[in-house]
Image (tube, rainbow, N blue to C red; front, top):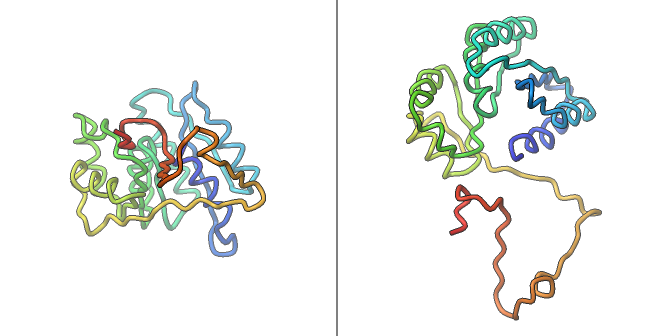
Length: 195
């Protein structure tokens, strides 16, 4: 998935002399996200797991806040809904000086009650938001009522491995005639706007 791939490509590239990174993966018992966990560990990123025991797990906030007190980070950076909810509250309880949240999608469920109400409260404790596109930025501002002044757009950048690039002649592959050709690389979901 995009958010996970983003972390896998970005975190190992950060200067280990300047940054001491610890990723805490919040996971459900039946969805342990083993691949993310293993890939980050293999890349040399300190990674821990915390289990979400039920849909609403207040004890997770307490466990996470205790762990954050032990780690004493300067910044907590949340990615995806569980981290936004539990991580933000736990970071505030633990006294973390700065909380940043990355928004990777314009998820419609974020606009539904009671989650929308809960996010509007929790978002007040987040210092900065990073949106991966202008559309996601606009959604965050409009739907979650986040002030525009605290939402920055930072586009994804993915490394291109020159040795493993495969050139495909799309015209031959799909039997297309000569002329302009436009390619859009994205999941075929309504959210991506392929209509």
